Image 1 (cartoon, rainbow, N blue to C red):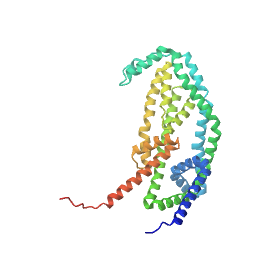
Image 2: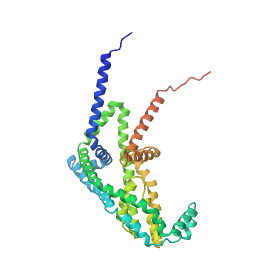
Image 3: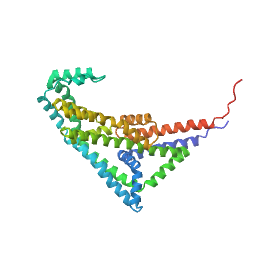
Image 4: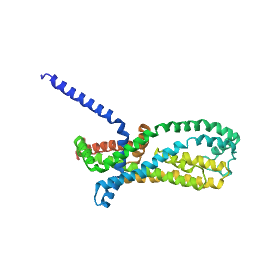
Length: 361
């Protein structure tokens, strides 16, 4: 019987331990840059086809194309997002002011057509009537604690705006580097995946890029469309601070909450102020805007990656809960990779199975 080679066991154990220590050390050093790197990777992968078209227009100069894409990134994504965050924080004190202004208003009785609404009509009428009976003081007593918490949260975030700005700046810098050296980076990633999993590993990498592009198109474009349309509706119907509310809607849409948390209270506020025509117009517009994502998002995601819609939805929601906003992009990619690996493994097993199985006698 062959005796175990304790020297080889010790060598292997020390090698694995040193590799683990090296990985932990590298992760600790790069950890402050990981959020910016993830965001930059998502942005570059999503906009890479656009960058190639820009490069063709600029006489094939990659440096000029990378510069143009970086400037466009500043103008289209970073600056508006920064303005949205700053606008929300700067106007956070108005939440309590708006709540206090409701004390001077009266709550009208529900219109007769509310009772006739299918399914929700009777319950909505009862709740509305209770609020009207309680008056502004009763409603304020319910809203005040939550408005105070929201205002406090926004004010607390003001201290972290400097760090957010640094993260945005790092994202732009890393994006510029990836635009300039994207071909080399992509080739390295594909080679690494091929070394790990062969040809299926390389296919998984390509699918991950398509999943990132599809989810980014579905989430960001849908959020922009819903917030812009919702802002137009608020401005046309005369709702105050429409710009601030549009910024809030954009943040909520990116976080997959939807614009309803802004538009529905705005509709109630218009009816409360006896602006029945404007309230009805905004109500119809709210139904259109809030249901737009059910049509637009699946179409955009399907254009980027042919994945089951349930898989994409689970990845978006699960990633958001687990990792925050960046998880919206990471979640579907992780599920897409797992789905592709399992599918390839099952198909490989089916291909290896014999075609003719002898029947039992």
